Amino acid sequence: MTSFLLRRTLAALLFVAVVSTSAVILTRLAPGDATLGMKEYGYNETQIAAERARLGLDRPIHEQVLVWLRGIVQFDLGQTRARQPVRALVFDAAVNTAILAAIALLLATALGVPIGILTGARPHGWLARIVLPISIALVACPPIVGALALLLLAVETGWLSVAPGSLALPALALALPIAASLERLQSQATGETLAGPEITAAAARGVPPARLVWIHAARQSLRPVLGVYGIIIASLFSGSLAVEVITSWPGLGRLMASALTGREVFLTAGCALAGAILIAAGNLIADVLRAIADPRVRGRA
Image 1 (cartoon, rainbow, N blue to C red):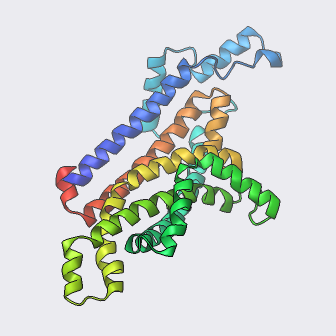
Image 2 (image 1 turned 90 degrees about the vertical axis):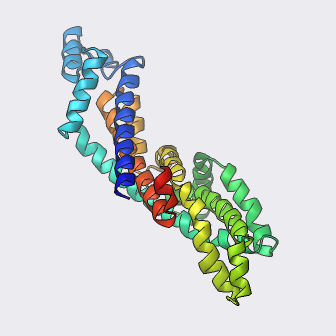
Image 3 (image 1 turned 135 degrees about the horizontal axis):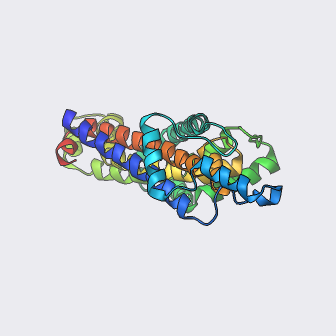
């Protein structure tokens, strides 16, 4: 287990470094920079050049990448054009995004996994007939479309708050497609597990049907579901970027949009760094849970 954790941790650190460094390079290569609109506000060329020097935009890309990597080691992510510390801005936004993602994932799991066990145990029952088309529609629906639909519903009915900082709407927009995906995966895994020889043997020994489904089958069918949690977590954070902008949630998505609009190199890279850390941490937790549930994973990873 120690070797497994070490390999996964090193892979996570490499992922974080590559993502954040790529953000610095791509932002620098994009047309324009943070001083692009200064002429419109009456700044002369000398002032613009001084601002470019302060922000490091007059340096070659490789030098700015080295400055960025050195800053990561020293926990100093630089400043924005408005002289605000990037670290503080990114930390506050990352906390908000982590809260939103955690609640959405918990809600999706609480909905998707139990319903998937029920539909997998009775694939031709009335519940499965109702849930199947709803799950397929939600899986096919991008989070941004779901957020717009929920926003319209909230405005028309008043069931959900649309005030900036309200958590229910963005959490539901992220949770419902993931819950549908988990339901489909759990349903298939439960059906395959119940058809296996271990469950048949347990039923022959007189184990009650409810115990077969909720204890024996549920425990075994969770393994393949845990295997895709890393992908689900990555899609959760990628989907949250658009949802946060639409629902005015003060997370990394809104901050990243502001950074890209203003061509803020270090702020963009800081948002990418925080997002990569959250994704890597989520994947690492999912890998550990899967390794605990299925020890064979440790040797293959």
